Image (tube, rainbow, N blue to C red; front, side, top):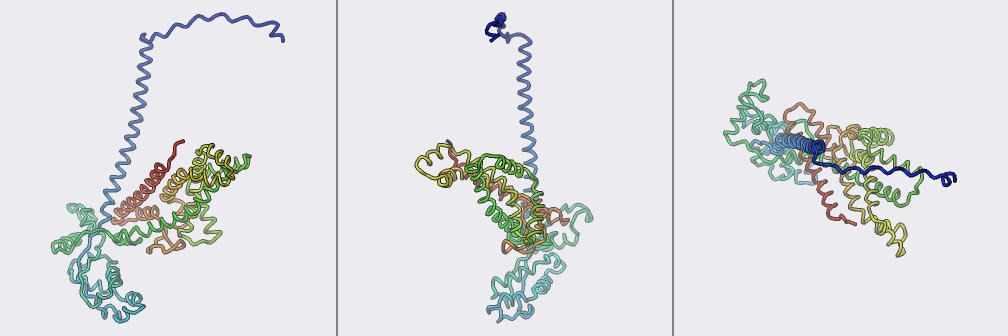
Length: 439
């Protein structure tokens, strides 16, 4: 009231600011400094990208250089007489209902030892587990009993690496990694035409082994698939339903805020913490089978669940409110609006987030080490509770082995893992582009 009776005096008029003269030396210097800063920023960004691309290219080059040869292996030709008497097998019983059991009673190790004598001084080039090929051949075709067949069996890892040119033959024997005796045997067999290099079916169809030439990746790959099946079977429905409830039905109060903050924090928790949780809950409390895909999948589901909830909430929130309003306007219930309109429209984003979460789970190692999936497993898993390992753990185990033959097996396993990850990411990109809608 007093201000209205005693108004403030008007401010004096400010003199007009003269226009900027961009032609002065000072302003030209400022403009040059701005452009110089911009060029420096672009140069640093380009340098960072180039450095990252160089390291990525160097990594891929190293992996493919060392691992490409792991998909091929060397074999030696033998003439094998499958004498059932020498094997200790009843040829008549082989044709009966228990034929497989009768075949596995045979002494194929002794048969292989007798067959390698035809190689003379080069008999030691044959792998210790090559007798398994003879047993597999009889199991596949029992009619070969009593006949003499030409069989190609794997050679020892040192001979295999020698045939692939992995050793410097001009180096002294003590530092070469392969003996003069092995080199002489390899050259003798090669001159006789008894050696060949072919696709390594052992690597793609077998499980782990202490011998590099007999080690395979199929057991770990199957373990990874079973583990991911458990992970997605639990985390996808639970994560999507939790996201729907939080986004569409949950009341806005402090408890809902606490749940949302907890989910966001769980997504940033280190994966090894989930391994400790799985060890404490699934193994120590519920006594579930150790080293099994079931426990591995449950542990990875705990780790992946927050990622799926967050990505599903973002996808559901991206559906325009007009879709909900239109459905409610024609009489649909809230449940019908969500499951018949919102969820189908948000499903591409949900699936993309889920597949990316599965790709992360496929590459995890730390939580699986804590629940015992680093065990030495020589058989392929037959179910969700069978002992198994996974691809990242298999890579870790082989990289820690001192035998030189496991170097290429490690890189070859990484190639398989990268191909699977690339496949999953390609599926995610395809789904996003195929079903993406712009509002």
